[in-house]
Length: 126
Image (cartoon, rainbow, N blue to C red; front, side, top):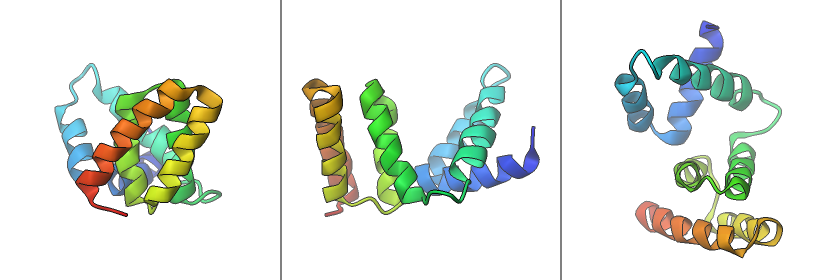
């Protein structure tokens, strides 16, 4: 494990997904899942998200698009919350869902809208 990438990834992962969520995931990991938690923190968050080429808001917007296209709605909800933490506004989330509907299908967009409405109500952003 690359400690530097892990630490950078951990910082960004906590800032995006919430300290409580990330700490809980790491604390609940066992010998079976802990290597994966380390890998995603190091690789996804440390290598991918810590790259300064794209800002975190743009990465969040891309993530919502890709997760919506793949139909990964549990992750879409988590990353919708993270997108808000990274500065994505309601209008931008709506536009992202429109693109998902156009390129990936109306059912995917309907699922994203249901989740986004719940997340937006919980976060009380406009």
